[in-house]
Length: 366
Image 1 (spheres, rainbow, N blue to C red):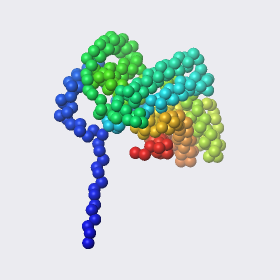
Image 2: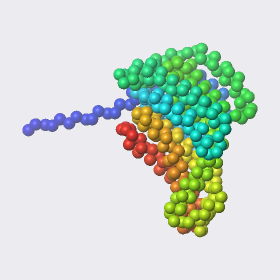
Image 3: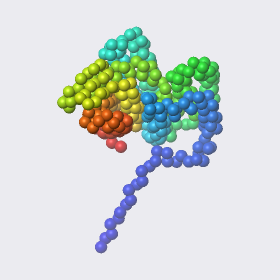
């Protein structure tokens, strides 16, 4: 009688295998890193201290903010031994975004010369990110045959002390920025400081390699004020349009009292600013770029993911508003308001599931 040999399945390898506390403490980047962290916390403490209030505000647009630093850290974890191929994705996204700004402004009746200016800004910033990512994937890392790089663990740590000079203009600008309370500008300075800090602590290759996870932190910072001001009212009206169309499809005979008010037989829907859908758009954009950074889709798959965000957010937000009307009309005002208070979390989870499944459909296998 022969005995069957049963071999245990190999354990999944951690991306950080081989990285120990002792290795970190002996790294040439450890002491500069501690000094940098202390300096950044001291310099940007007013901005950092305001983050919990920004993220927890009921009427704010950054309720997803507390997840962003965790996601950024997770992206770095995933890139430790294997990086993405994203430069072509960012090139296409830059072109689409630059074109979308004037088109959306034309559609919403708010087109002016500033739309062209912001298209230029997007082209410049997107071109810079695309160039940095190209360097990461084609020359900074030791590339494989398919052009992908081998991960952060392959990079040498070489502190670059002259990078400290770049902090001098930032320190000089910080005081007037705090006095004028220009949160968006402070946020940009914070992101720049992080990038220069990585250059100082670990070298230029690390700065380029970590540029995308650092820029991702912008989704948690008050950097979107101008976009919120420009697109809040148009999105509010579009969300009302979607809700009105759905209520008509539900045969509830809605009446449009004005651009943001819908009357039903026993309930009135007032689509206020917090219900504009912009909060959902920002959160979904953050989640979508998370998938883009880790899913390793083709460039057209990443582009499809990003292009899905706004239609999905507006439809789901309009559906939420319509369902609030249905609940309020059928079960009373208190039931409608109770559904209003809790349905935001439901719609966010629903959108996340849809994005996740869409990424799977496009080829994400992990």
